[in-house]
Image (cartoon, rainbow, N blue to C red; front, side, top):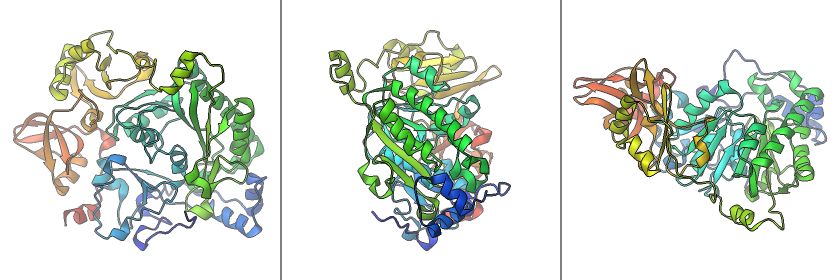
Length: 507
């Protein structure tokens, strides 16, 4: 695998208006001496230090991580095959550069959930977890610091129709965008929590097959986006974050089953927050290195199982990732050994709601999902739960612990005043049996879809709740009266589709 980044003329990642950060945030500049001190004891030649310092103050364009179930049918307005260059992010083959002229965040493809926009460096953690392969299929996975969802959504896609994800975000104000991004995948095989890692470890010890920790850090890779100050390179800042990271890693170790895997990542360059944490996990937690063969080109000079991408070499903001495993201790009880071999053993249960849903909510769910919540609960196939003005539905085969009041499930309905309405996440949902959304559907062309995404109505002779879609991809709910379909897209899901993209999609 070559370290060089090949980008076609139409797919350059050096700059892109479609993913340009806010102009109000100015990059923070460092000199070569400051950079050298920040990455010590890693040594770089003087000229490379200067190139790194310059690159750390340059904004790098986002890339598109294409949704796994959309890769074969991914639709672009550009017919030129060179505009889709699959080697633009060599460490993560499901990511593509944004073609010039394609306003990714203002496209119908984005609204339909075809891809997630993120810095290429952030994909290093998913590469370390091998989320682009089938390695995580069927696993019970935890993203311990999950918001806003760039990695959690990748993990959710990777676990397939038999796995389950707990996306934990300790900061409650960040849960809403996390929930929205998870819903955009169309999967329902997840729960959300907002727990301190220590508290979560007390609730679910030894449960997970894989845990990803995108740890809070000094954020030196964020200097280029103006999202961090020069204080990010201060020793005191680095030391404070390193101590916090060790507390989180200790909690993750408790959450992990014997034989399970930890993927640790940061967006900083400080060795104390990266390779030193690997040494600490091996020494204090008795973890074992678990190298990723496909990332050998990015191996850290200080750790066999640690990997780095650099802004001056790899056309990204920069990142670090590592993979380690928790050994199965010789002399474990027979039950523990069996548990470690079967990721789901002792973690399944029959899920039944403790209280019936409101009759209006029950009736609505039955009409749009084709299953009665009360009957599903009796059969133990699905767990429905009502939280005052929100109704949730966990997938068939979800772990028993999702019944706890500290979990948040995929939303299927919400109440406005006294009226229950289907939730936006329900329109996008596609994976669960028996919760197949069976509402009427209306297909829109490019122009109609752009109007709908902007908040407009759609013409239809249908009546009742219907799913508005574009090229068989759900966009959201409408409610029709036989003449027009009223728009029920939530405000945060609306957008003005870029005119040039719409026009090209129509040709």
